[in-house]
Image (tube, rainbow over all chains, first blue to last red; front, side, top):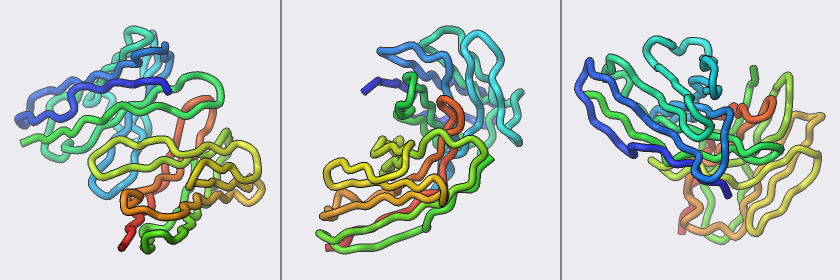
Length: 115
Length: 109
């Protein structure tokens, strides 16, 4: 299947700093990528849809000024958590479609811990 | 939006069969997926249904009834490594997936 690479796998940052997470489709072009957040023992919650060359679409309740998404190329989307706080500590996962009626492919996920 | 419901937890013994049910309500159904997720890891794809009926893939099978808004994932010949969370996800449009809360399956010896 197609490969989606997410980096870093884990990151610890101080409260008030910003963290950038990258999501790359390695062997296909993805005009659309998705960013999810998952708190312990909960399911994946869609945060936003990242569209190549245009603004991201955010789900209700997600602050677009806090979670900056950039999809500058067909193989790369980035999520920047700005002014991180401990409550932002979570597992962030990206996914990309491969076209047609196929499954979305997930990155490895990023465990963010804000101290 | 969607309402996706699945049981929170299930327990079964090694070698047994477990069926995980999922019901959903959606305005633009375009496929139902099942994913397996081990703790601290990203979900991995198990199965996909877009038409009514049963899809079989080795020890795992998935069933869909669009008219009833219902699906199930059947795990046969359970192994210890099958202990994980199983996520039911509904797709609207081309790629957007919405997930249920997940069912934690515990396999006991």
